[in-house]
Image 1 (cartoon, rainbow, N blue to C red):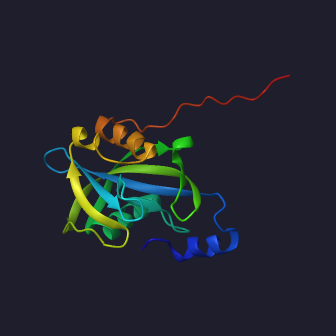
Image 2 (spheres, rainbow, N blue to C red):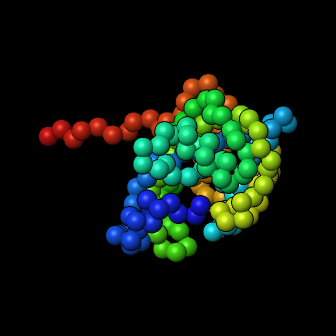
Length: 168
């Protein structure tokens, strides 16, 4: 589903203005250590399966749902890769919509399903090695998450705090 009814209702009120949302994505590795990526229909870029959470949805549920919708695979999140944000996560879509995403990334294992692009959100679905990913067109945000996914750390990633109160 390209845009949820919830987000469509918000867009009807605010137009293309900046909205913030929480998103979830999954890193699914095959037996050869390659990662699953989708080619997005709207931009042609490659990305991890994922998308915005719906109201009252758990991040792990959103990650599994988005992967199912975009790839035909039902996956089970097994590890938190990290929580991501920053200027790279500000996205301007071709239609003019502006979004800022705080993204929760999971590693997930395939449970069942047959790999297929949905034809609406995704044009292609494939596994790639780390080296192959370097040649793909993707956003800086996707590259940040991919680096952490391939790192395979047991500790969840988050950017360290650089904020402090201003004292007079």
